Image (cartoon, rainbow, N blue to C red; front, side, top):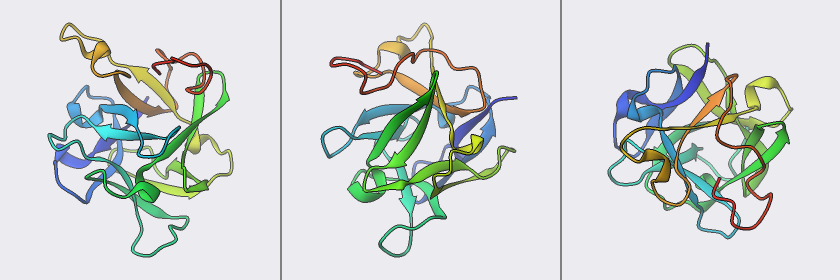
Length: 172
């Protein structure tokens, strides 16, 4: 079965953890890929956040180290929030912190309520992500410049067929 990134309980508050959950179609499993604060970077914005909170590497100290937790915060911490999305195979990507490019988004457990961390990239299967475009009658696929996305682990990808930096004008 597919496991999806999930904002715990759909709570829109700084520090709400991001975990893994089986696909249920809820807004807490939807993220919008938006431009980061540094050219060429991205942020994963939680759709369930009315305040546009984004995925954040939680680390009580700097520099951010392997094992940093993942939660959502207001977009105000570029090193912990700006991401690079790098094609590593057919429709598969690693998601790394731009400022700490050795640290990749990692599904520590794909069970419901499973932990998500930024760990040292090893190329393991739990560090490879797929993006699934969310369709619907409400115009979700045309929301913003890049559409709504479900970052998923070990699923059947659809929607994205080349790297984000593959060519100018690609809307991801």
